[in-house]
Amino acid sequence: MSVNTASTPPSNPSSPTLISSTRTGSTPVAIQQFDPLGTLDGRPISVVAGVGVLVFSAVATWLNWGTIVHPLLASAALLAVASTSLMLVVGTSPLRAPFTRSRHAVAVGSSLIAFAMSSASLGDSAALMTAYWAPVVVGTSCMVLAPYRPVRELVAVGILASSVTGFIALVRSTALTTDASPVIVMLFSITPVLAMSLGGAAFARSLALSHQRWESRAKYGALRQIEREHLTVARSVQQDRVTILNRDVVPLLTALSKRGIVSPDDRARAAEYSASLRQLMVTEVNRSWLESVVASSFGALDDGNRVRDPHRLASGMTAHQRTALRAAVLAVATGDELVWDSVRLAIEKTPSGAVIIVHATVASSESSWRSSLAPYFAVLRVVFTGLHISYNSPSLIVRFTYDTP
Image (tube, rainbow, N blue to C red):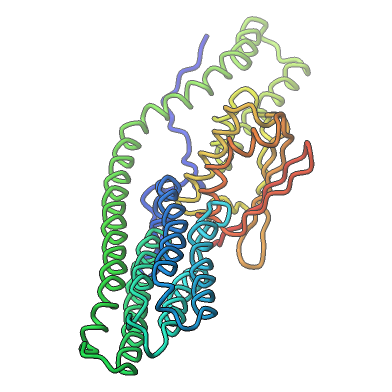
C-alpha cells in the first residue's frame, strides 16, 4: 500500500519576489551601491590617484619654489592636498563604506582650498599667475570619486568646483598687471576641472544604465526560470510528503486493515502522525526566505533554530540586501573560519526598521577570518547600514540594520 497524490503544496507568502524594485526611481544611487564588488576591484585606482596627486603637487611646488613669495601659504596648500589624498585613499576603503556626501565635500573642498592658497602664495610679482597644477588635482579628485556618489551630485559638484576654480583664477589674473586676458586664464583653469568631473559623471551614468539594463534582463530570465521550475519544485515537495506518509502512516493503515481492530495505541500513533504532518506543513508555509536559505546552505547541519525572526522582518529586505546576505550565509556555511554549529541569526525590530545580529564562534585566526570574509563585509556595508563587528576571541558578533516598509 502506498500513497501518491498530485496535490500542489501551498505557496509561501513570505518568499522573495524577484520582480520587486529595490530602489525607487527618485532615489539617486551610486555605482558603489549598484555594484559593490566591482567598485571594490576598482579601488586601487583611488589609492594610486590619492598618492599621485600629493606627489604631483609636491613636485610642482618644488619646481616652482623660486616664484613662491609666501612659503607658508604654499605649505598650507600641500596640507590641503594631503587632506584630499587622505579622503581618496582612506575614505574609499571598504571598511568605511559607503562613501558619504560629507567625505565627497571634504575631498573636493580641500583641493579647491589648495588651489586658492597655492595661487595666493605666488604673490603679486610672480611669473605664474596661478598654480597650474591645482586644477588638475581638483579635476582628478572629482573624476576618481565618480563610482562612489550619485550622478546628479557628481555633476553638481563638478560644475560648482569649476565655477570656484574659474573665480579664483579670474580674481588672481585681474589683480596682476599682465598682457594675458583674464578670460584665457580662467578657461585655462576651468578646463581640466570641468572635463574630468563631467567625464567621471558620464562614466558613472553609463555604468549605472548598463547595470540597470542587465538587472532588468536578469530579473526577466529569473522569472521565466521560476515558471519552468515551479512544477518540478512542487513535485519534489510532494514527494517528500509522500515519503513521510509511506514511512509512517502506510504501515499503520496496513496493520489496521489486517487486524480489523483499532486499539488505543493505534489511536495514539495516528494522533502523533497527524500532529507531526500538520506541524511540518505549517512550518513549510511559514518559513521565510532567509530560513530557507540557511536551511539549504547548511544542509544536514541545520537544526531549524539558526534564524530567529519573530516579527517576520526578513521579508522587508530589498533584492540587493537579500542577495548580499544570501552570499554571506553560503560563504559561512561552506567555509571553515567559523564553527558551523555556533552560527545564529536574530532579526529584531527597531524604531526605524530592523537590526540583524549574527552570533558565531571563530575557528581560525583573526587574520584568516577577516581576510576571508572581508569582501562579504564590504558588500554588507554598502547595501545595509551601520554594520558593526565585535570580536572577543573566540566570540564574533556582527550587527547591521536596514529600513523596513
